[in-house]
Image: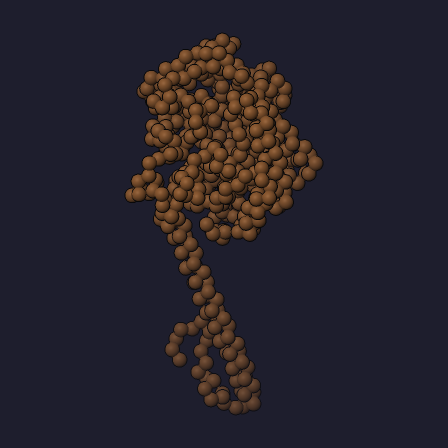
Length: 454
């Protein structure tokens, strides 16, 4: 990928750094940014995304570039290793000259796992973010869109949840605590250094997949979240679903959550990007959700309808760290960002099933040497074939540069001819005043820009 900016598309001059780019949310963000015309630099440590060992990029991002018809720059990066992170930033600045905004998705995110591995979560999610923001500042970027979570609200006292409701109180799991603590760090940073602009987006249960069925959620091992688990049961990969808790104070006794389609969620990020690019400084938080809660049993019924498959389940005891219900008021994002979720639970289940049924093993595929999408040489094919449009644009640009060069040479030639004409006219005027005839040969001097034969 060339560091040259396409001046015909102003957005290509905006460099967006995406961390955790190969994951579920990060990959959908990269696709939306590329489709919107932005230049994307992607970072991932490969912990939560699958990569063919023969290729240099994760499968999710290769498919993103296929869908977008544009390339991104990818770096395998570990936020916990500040030395290597700074070296990567040097390369980015050398190629692109700047980083305008960072979208920070990189984090460990399983609620249940965070309860059993709290130190791993604190180290990765908090220390990694501190390394990132220090490195961003060192290389001239002080604009950040942070991937936060509804878990910062803990067990809410009232519903729906609003941005000005208390955070950090009654937090039930280390994952939520890392998101809350990181928000506090970013808030303090913005207060101490007013040239920082930070937008923290609090997610309410992202689900769904891209409508193409080419990218979606591909969890490592047994899924920790409800919808991908249900999808694998429907696909026959898992025998049945365990519903954690049937005695919550909800409509049917199962937990209620505000599920948001991944496409709506990423639309919110693009709106936040547009907002922060308007020279926003300070710290702002927005809820991203539909404002409607669905119970576990309602999700199961919706997925059964979408997949036309039976989904066996059993209700078991509650899971540590879970709460009864969580759904939001997202009106602030609508008022200030111009964003609203438009897709419902049926759309979410339909697109998840489209992804799951087409990709039974997620991104892991048996490779066919004749298949563009799944060939071991797909990246070479991508670079040579997929980006023909980019090559054509580059060719057109080169053609225009050639025309400009010709025009510049012609202009110089015409300028020299004009100087010659002025000299001849001046000499002839002097000779006329002296009563002399024009000098030999000077009467044949042609006008500049004239193609007539002499």
